[in-house]
Structures are given as structure tokens and as C-alpha cells.
Image (cartoon, rainbow, N blue to C red):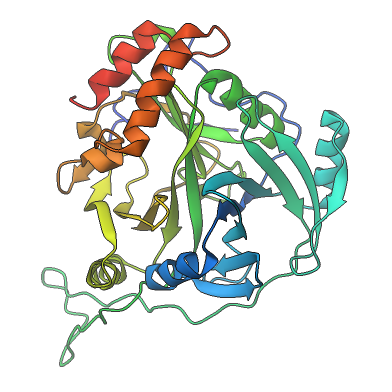
Length: 377
């Protein structure tokens, strides 16, 4: 397999140095093909469904205690929400290539293979990452048929006239979600959990980030994609960052184009929902983004035009900074960084004290200093 070793003009300022983490396992158990869905718990399914429709999801199934939300592309639901006493992230499901891979993973881990509910179909093996995150690997699901999508716009650019005698009038309506793109998690056992995902699911790292001045201690964040061989995959399906507690950070959902994203954002704003940060374009992944808080506090992202990499690209390395989150757009918000005064920032502060007092995690005093620098760098 030939590989690209340079990152100039690609996706990161610098490549690996001798001794750096390789960003992939030499002989993984299986190689998952994609992120299938996320599982959440929320106390009010009616409220959750109302936001979901404004955000651009369609309802695939609904009962008194469970809500399945889907994008327009054919496949499985994107999000499964179950009624619970409090709002929480329950885990992610990854799609295996076939049933044989699910059986192989179960055999390697000693886990039991089960059947998914009839409403979804297929089989599942339930695992747990070292940091406690729930991980399901699934295959053989019934495929939901495709729904209508938003057509991408035709643009006049420079002297290239592709639209004549016609206007652009994107509707101020929900941006139609096409598919689930990625989930971002924080882990206080980051390196151990990263290696677990690479070894068990065959994921590979697109970009590493590290705290400034701490490159020699290794990475503190990774953007991780599926290894589909020569078929390009999203720059990241899973992203993980070191932090004082294990938690969901955000999840991202693809829409047709910038107009769908921007007009959909206007619809959300008019409905009274809170924009956390956007509109802008990321550096790692290159996505045009727009972040929103749902009524239960979950951070969710509309994105379009993300990078796609095959398995020949080696990991990039860059310092982890707030200013390095976007190529253009408004300054990153305190809400997005998690430092806005409130319940979540208070939980994070308390967890810093707890993590520093414990020796069963990777978060120590130098890492705390590095993390605190990120918000102002």
C-alpha cells in the first residue's frame, strides 16, 4: 500500500516524527464500514421530536418510549432516543461489513452476539471501550428507503455562467438531514481508548492534535476515520479528546450545501433555538459547520463539504488551539468550548479536581495546564 507522507496543503501543518503514534493498528480484529447510529436517553420525547424536525430529521419510528430519527439517505436510523429519567448519551453503533465480522469480533472479545429489535433487523455485539463508552457493532439491518433530498444549488462562479435567466431562492425551512457523519467524545483514558478502537474496529487516524509544548507526551485529540481501503471515507467518523471526564461532546449530520445549512439555521433561529457557534469552515475535516443546542443541552452540528480520505493518507499532527478550529467564521464561542458559566462548565470544573486526585486516568496537572491554554490560544 502506498501512502501519502506529506501534509503540506492537505489537512495538517506537519506529519509524524519518529516514535509518534502510528494512528492505526497493525492487525485489527475487523474494519467497520461506518457509524450506524447514536443512542440517547431523554425524558421528553415530544420535545426531542419537535427539535429534531426543526433540525431536519424525519421520524422513522415512534412509540411511547422510543423515537427513531433518520436522514434522507437509505439505511438505518441516525439517532435512537429512548425515554429516560435524565438526558444522557448511551453509546454509538458502528456498521460492520457483514455478519461474519460481528461474529469474529464477538469471538475475539468473548462477547455474546444478539439480535436487534425487529423494527431494525440484524445482529449486534455489545462492547465497552476502556473509558466506559458504549460501543455496538451491527450488521444485517433492514434498509430504510431513501427519502427526498434537497438539490444542491447551481452557482455562477467568476466567468463561468451556469445559471442564466433563473434566480436563487433557498427556502427558509429545515435543512434536510442526509446522514449521520460523526460523533465527538471526551475521554479521561484517551490513549487507552484510542488504541482499543483502532485494534477492535480497524479505525485509522486522519489527524492528531497535542497540547502546545507537550508534543513529546503524545496526542491529546484524534480525528479517526473508517478504513475502507481505496474507497474514500469521512475525515472523521469518531473524534476523541483527552479531558477530565468521559462525556459526549457533539455529533454531526450532513446537509446538501451551504444554502441548505444557512437557511436551515435561520429556520432554527426563528423557532427560538440556540446557535452555539457558526457558520464557519473547519480546518481538520474542512467541513462548513453550524452548531446548535437542542432543548436537552446536546450539541449537534449541520455540516456540508467535508474531506474524504482513502487509507493511503498518514496522520497529520498539529497543536490543539481554539483559533485552529476554523479557517473562517466567527470567533469560537464559550458555549462551544464548554467554558460558558453554567451547569456543564461546573461539572467539568468538579471533574478536573476528581481526575487530578485519582491515578486511574490520563489527566494530570500538566495536561490540565495544556487544556486551559486551549481556550485562549
